[in-house]
Length: 393
Image (tube, rainbow, N blue to C red; front, side, top):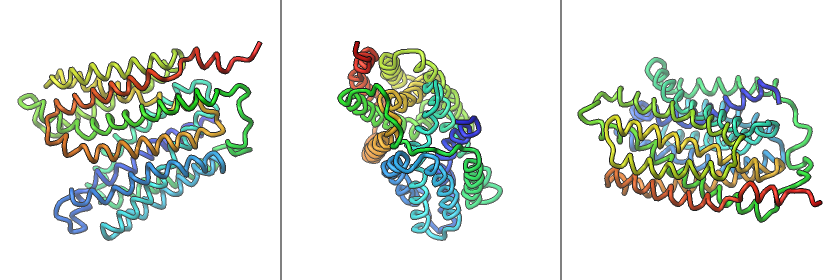
């Protein structure tokens, strides 16, 4: 794979997360135009986008393996361009809900297709995954800044039209620069020393459970950190803009943990490294439960770095335990399960957590991290993999 194609695949990850956040960043302005009194009443109309983002991963992964990843990435770029433009043309809440759902379906293509495509020819999968995840997180930050600027000066519809144009341009570049696939991944020759089915199933079961619990922690923190800072910084910082900058700083700094972890994955045994990061989450959540002010800020840097740092393992396990012939299908199933379960759980637990204190939230997250650690302890060791795949003497 040439370097321009790799850069486009990383940029596509940022674009994927960017388009999913534009609506949330502009919802108050959209509600006013549609004659809805409270922006909260418009938020449920985006549910279809996130449902399709999870469910669409299964057919997207299957098509990526059987039809071709390059072709599916072109569908991703053109689909994002068309659906974002459609959102910009909507005139009612129902119309925008349908258009957002279509956009979510096209957004679901990237993770099970783009990431395996990026990893198919790399010699340093850990670093590749870390950089790719960093690009995705930067998409979140860019979305908030870009949407605010576009809404202020050009209107909310322009906030969707700009990504539409950007996606179309990226699609043209990808079509021109990405090398043609000689065969779909499913038609390639299998590895000469495949990992035994029992070990692969065990590893994928572990990573699916760990992915689900990790998604829970990600959703709880990213959706609650702003209010957490507002409560715990009383008497120290009260300006909303300053608090927002503090939260953004936490995300920006913590996101680089993914690159560091990616480098370590290429140099160390995966299981103890993964387990160590998850155990650190338990300690940091416990400290954060009792912290406030700048001590909380330090704890937030720590637990967000640990949450972000666990993400590269999810794709690294698939690379290590699953042959490239079927990585997109396996990734699609894993994503559908983790996104689906964590989304439903957050929806159900949200009102209960909000009615309680943040201390209760941190205790709950520490318990989730304990469950993750127990699950990761069942991940097959590197020694077991080497023994299972060694040539008979």
